[in-house]
Image (cartoon, rainbow over all chains, first blue to last red; front, side):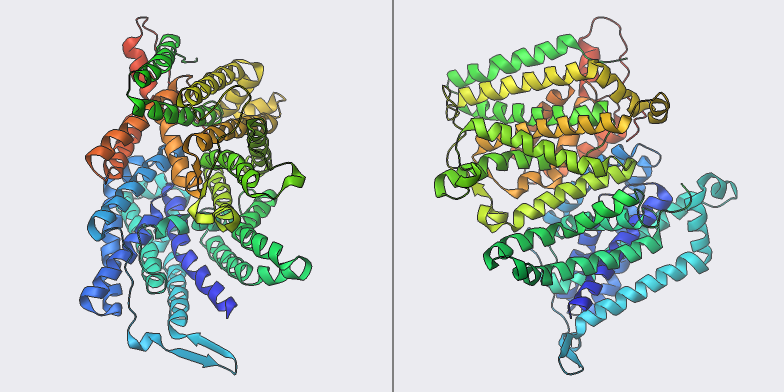
Length: 300
Length: 335
């Protein structure tokens, strides 16, 4: 059960982190506001679900909307920052977060929106004697795996993927060969936005869509791409799974483990603190041995 | 070539020393509060400027040190009131404990995380400092004894023999004194041989390593000094607000500190102070106009980054400087 929860968190993290690593790897652009797109995706989907009364339709409609938001962000802001210092990019996208969050605040108000699930997603399946799983969690896992598979296919077996990989290793050469590199960048950025948005939409029925949801996941997504190696899709996937599992299992079982050799009071105080710190400790350990992450991209 | 704007620095510091207390004594108490907050933020910004401006180490986790410093007041004060931890000698309301404790804790945290962070470069450094700050944030949130998410009210300010921090004027004087001390310290460091190596490593790390300098060690020491100084800002902040919460070390706070340093002008003595002034002005003015003040603030932030290079101190400095020096803003930094 906890393993599946970890898997689910890992897949959601992968959706967010893959967009981040894609944008960084190809555009050399640090996008702090990436998680704001996750938030925007969730909010759009939540309000569409409420007005259309159909979660599936809302998701299908929200995907192009987040793509458009990503496209606009790329055209208006991100484009001016390519080739600039990373510090500039960090600060500007920090400003962008404030703009997007306050913008969402203006549109949807300060309250979070709970997203009702349709009947057919609310049930539970029993696997074997003791294991009972909510259907929706399985749906998240399936969707996440499908998205990961799609991304893998896109990057490795299509012309667009070929261009993306080429753009990542040598930007000038690609544009010299007559490829519209600006268009490619916009597409990549929008793709990243859709992936983040999708993650937001999937999690919304469980947690509810709220303004602050992006701030929590962005750091974890950073941890994922640092551990995985920035720019590496494979690294992002493996690290996301790892972090998702470690975080979930740590929160679930550390408490019990600590009680074995501590008074239960001390365990109850220290276990939550340590489990909150666990993924950062893992990150520190990984970086202590591999400063560029587990799977550093070969070029750059 | 350094850009220091001595006249501008002097003018800003003299104004800051005279105007707020004068306003306070003439009955406008509000402005002294703003000024105290200003000096505290300025100390944090000065400390960040040491590594970001001079060292080229873009730390996105500086608010964690401010927060840790504040908790170094809050936790001993809490135990002084409610008992516990006497055996550790930590249950005390004395500032003679709080200040060294904050500085020691922050220096230690900076040492440990710095050893890992400084092995990485560029974007990795930005993200890993941010992640470590967030680690502290979540750790504090999950400790329910000290209020967790809700924060902790500090019932008594740090006690010093002879001075009372409950008096706003004395608190301001202390913060101001600390700010001057920190600015002087950073200036001295920067002009020393140590500072030269630090700045050299920002420009061309490989060359300095080839010349036989262990730049990692220099950067680590600067990182520790900077963290300790931010811890000092945190102690003062805890004493000023008498309420501490994990929100103080949220990564958006770190972003604001970076904004101050960049806006004020990196690698200048007065830049962080100007940046803090500008930030508070923007916050105060915009938040009286609209509750959505972060929207124009965000737009402004993007515009500043996209269109400006040298920061406020360059603009003001060039305008006020009669000599036709052309201070070169530090570009092409190597974060």
